Structures are given as structure tokens and as C-alpha cells.
Image 1 (cartoon, rainbow, N blue to C red):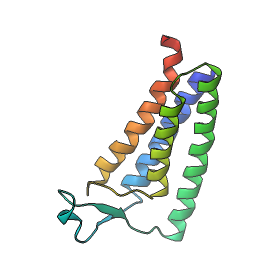
Image 2: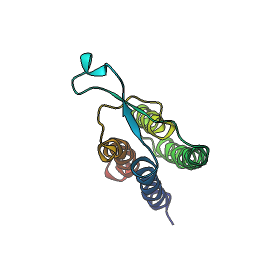
Image 3: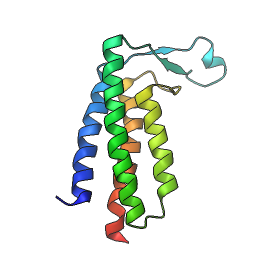
Length: 131
């Protein structure tokens, strides 16, 4: 299997796991008083149970492995978008680690934001073919 195909396949697998983690296993709560500063208010992640923390650690570890392989692929193919890839990875890591503030109370919308980062990364991986 070519490296690009391998990466695409594993990104699909990670995407499904991120969707499940955010939409099924995570919760968010309104930050009191935030609507005074931000229209619609801001939201924060609810603390995970110990079991879900283990799931989170495994997902993060698996994502980091595939992200490092993808970054190596981009470097080896001469991509000029390494910084863009790195920023996108950092954004997705914050969703998995649940360190970021959120601007929506809808977990599906939160997942869609995380998915955009995965889509960007997949696009950057596919880009060397088109250059």
C-alpha cells in the first residue's frame, strides 16, 4: 500500500474515533457570564471520567502517531505547507485533549470544527500529487 493511501485510510479511522469521542463520550457546559463578553456565550468541556480519560489518551496517542507519519510524508515530498499542517495538528490536539474553549453548545458542531482540521490535513497529504 502506498504511503498516501495508508495515511488516508488511517485518517478515516481517526475521524470516526474523534466523532465518537466528541459526540458520544464528551459533554460541554456553559461558562457563566460568558455571553456578556461573547455573543452566544462560550462553553467548556466537562471533566471526563477515569474510563473516558483512558479512551482520550489512547485516541491522542494514535492520532499523534499518524500525524507524525503524515508530517514526515509532507517533509519528504517537499510540501511547503508544513507550518499549516502543524497549526492544524495543534488545533485538533486541543479538541482531543479538550483544552479549548468552544463557541457552540452543539457537540455535532464541535465535531464538525475538529473534522475541518482532519480534512485540511488530508488535503495537504493529497496535495503533492497535484503539484
